[in-house]
Every structure is written in C-alpha cells, then in structure tokens.
Amino acid sequence: MVKDVLKCRIRASSTIEAAVVMSAALLCLMLIMFTGFYFHDVNILAGAACESAQVAGEWERMEESKSAEAYFQKRIQGKMLYFSSAGCTVDRSGKDIIVKARASSARMKAAVSASARMDVPEEDIRRLHMK
Image 1 (cartoon, rainbow, N blue to C red):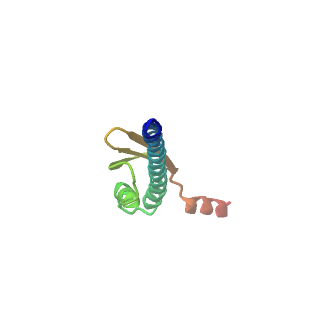
Image 2 (cartoon, rainbow, N blue to C red; image 1 turned 45 degrees about the vertical axis):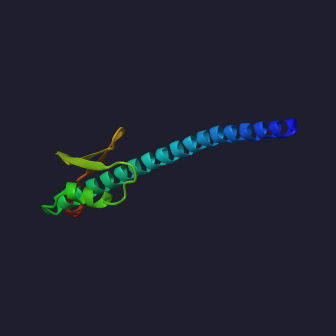
C-alpha cells in the first residue's frame, strides 16, 4: 500500500514537471514564430517600398500619372502575416524619389525607407552621340 502511494506521488510530480516544461517550450516556440513573422513583414515592406520607388521613377520619366501609393498597396496585399495596417508616402526631391513605408499592429510598429534616382538615359545617350 505504501509503495502504491509513493508511485502515485512520483507520477503526479512528473506530470506537473512536464506541464511546466511544455509551457516554457510552447512559449519559446511562439516567441520564435512571432519574431519570424515580424521580420517577414519587414522584408515585405522593404521590398515593396524599393520596387515602388523604382516604378515611380519610371512613371515620372515616362510622364505617366499613376499612383505609387496604390502600387505599394497592391504589392503588399495578402502578404503580411503580423501587421494589420500598412501605408506609404512618396516624396520627390529633385531627381530622387523616396518611399517611406510603415506598418503597425496592436503593439508593434515597423518603418522602412527606400529611394531611387530618376535618371533619363535617353538624354545621356544623346549627349554621348553629339560629341
């Protein structure tokens, strides 16, 4: 009888220890997953901002009136895992086009910036041929 009581206490003790260890392991797993989601979304933002800056430069050069902000939203649509809202602003200063993107969720925020130079290669080619 005493042997059975000791066996029962040992089994109960190992069950409680396993519950504590599994809770800590799941907490670590969730932390790793959310960190991965965060960096995934920051990379999506950076890529979309860079691409939007390049495309906006081409549109400026070709004198097309399209919105780089709408293009940015189209590029990130359905790709974000953690952030719920994202947006961008496009600044044009001289020949530079700067896209500043930001995203936020309940507690976290991220911001990236990308720039592109609006070059007109046709003018450079003509200038070389005129010499």
